[in-house]
Image (cartoon, rainbow, N blue to C red; front, side, top):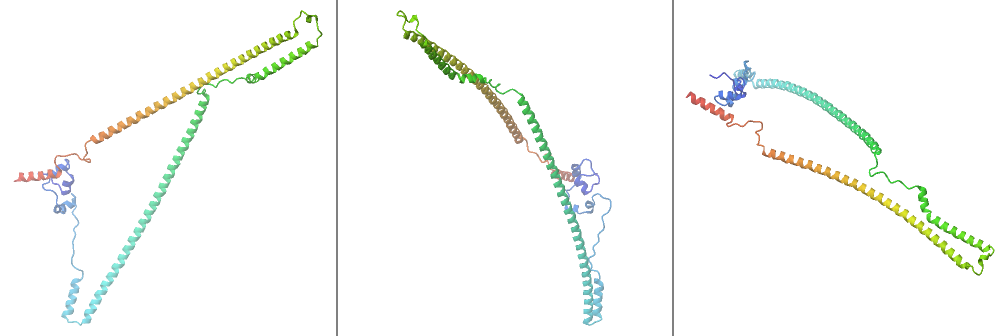
Length: 346
């Protein structure tokens, strides 16, 4: 025979280590309102008996009032006696109503005082909560400001350290070209003027020599067999002009060589600077392309992982809200157990 189990034990599976399913198999019939209203179900497996409640449907003093009315009728009292009894009864009821009203007002006042006290306590708790919340917000804001200030100071120190390190490193595109000395620049700028002054000085010296020769006395060299003076002067003049022209040409060719050499050197330096800067730009573009490729690869990887996660989420079978799937419900098992028990008795 099954062990003795009460209604709540059968309902919640207590008293049997096999749990709720074994308790349901022991029940012959499912619980009903009539069974749940019994003392066995309401006691909850407690051995202590329930409190015995009695109900008195009579009105206190009703028999005495009936006897008094019958006495007035049997003794054939006048109507004034009836009115006196009615007034006395109404006065008693009025006093009872007054006392009840006073007690009701007192209970209402007590309830109101208790509600006021609870309201004050709730308001105090609310204000305390608000102060605590504001205090926590202020602490959190102070902590955030402190962290931001610490981050700013760390950033400034790192920036200063980086500036010092960058300043100590060599130039990005090489050292700048060495500047030409000032005396060479001045000599190149004053070269044409120096040539003009030298030419003027030459012509002045030539004129002075001519005047000096003209003031000398004639010698025997100017006899009949001598060369004409004009021819000699013309030859010397032509020779001097040829030498001066040759000097001017040599000086001009020398200046052109210097200019050409300086131009080639500046062009080579500019070309070197352009190549260095282009190499810097190529390195920068390559670094940018490499970082873009890494970002694109990371983005593609994240997108693939997201797509795989969504695909797994879509292919995942639906859950049962924490319940294990069963072939038959608990109610079906209970009904089958009841039927099998009935058929077994028959």
